[in-house]
Image (cartoon, rainbow, N blue to C red; front, top):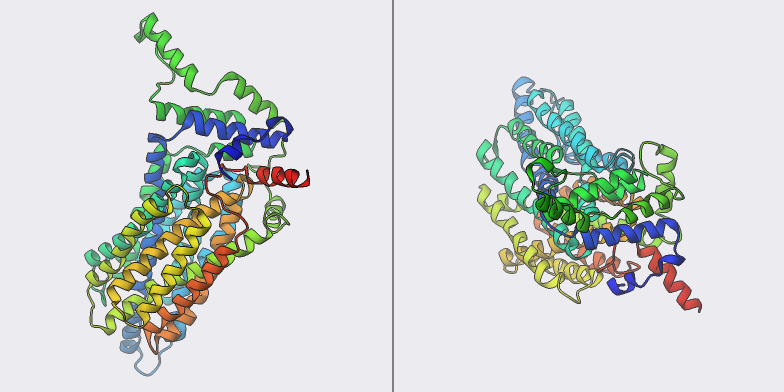
Length: 524
């Protein structure tokens, strides 16, 4: 299913909605292209994923500090009664509460982003996230820790899927994979940034002001809010979906102007007749033509729009139901399994590694920092191997899963531990990029945020369950967790193989059109 197949679709035999999709894709590929607009959007959206990585590493560092502080305080105040004592069971719930918040937040991603728009949700949630982080400075009781961690996860989870979704919807096919890869570098940078913050604020890995460290995470939320307010534009695909056709056309023209360096609203008093004529010709050649605008507006009159302010809970539930219809059933089930186990492994490793280093008396931040440097080459591998001509999404996912699983098992057997951990993290990061890329490409625009929200919800279920398994195993031998991670890696490779189709070079929203065309050709 490549570009030539997409372009071969006969628009005369398509529905109004399908024709609108084709016109929008042609505008995105031929007029908008890729330029400064997408580049500055990438910088802003990658900060959302940076926050994700920072959140993970700070959780693994802060929670032992909270337990030690509270238990010491409890012993000092009530030597014989430990009502505020954080035992192993409480510690597990303290670890998982943020993911319970993320679980509920993921449920609302699709609803809020389809009702109010991608940009508004990113801005509002980023601001609320800043407030939730700063609230940690006021914590004095255990129950307040649970409330703060739950709210932080709840708010942040709404925006996590929107980083890759937003970019996918504003970029041409050729640059989609590289953009999603760049956004995912934010997770690695976030891990390293979280370690750097911990090194600056804490005394060492076992002592320091955890309240200030948690509050310092407001920095990322503030950067996203300001960047989104100043430079992000609403997704034109969302605007079309919510029947805001003229607004969508205006956004597309703004994107073209930024990329082509065209100045809109030329001041006629400052230009000669010749210069003004040339400026207008440049605009007319590059901006959306009157014919295309009229066509999009006329087509919209006969389309049943399922996004915008009129979207209600009933309509949203119908979208969720559509994820499990005959066309999407296999895709949704196996993607959900992939996200569940990917989340389990991703944070399971981050929780386990500090325990292993403490066993080996490596209690400084440099040991953890070096461990996550292994993710940096994954982006080069993705670019030169998995993004090359001929590499498909499914095959690349299977290869990266098998590699990660194998080297997790080698790490368990203590075979060249630094090297095997390095390769494991590298392969795992490649798979993570491919997973998000595939999910954004596989679902159409009216299901994209709902589908990705559902996937993130299942991922958070894996994270909620993970501490109860990982911490139980780690109580006996932390390194045994890597044997489990390795076996799960092989299982994920099988689930990747079972995905119903490949999305390489596929233009957005045309998957259903290609499936319909193939069915007609087979019947003939």
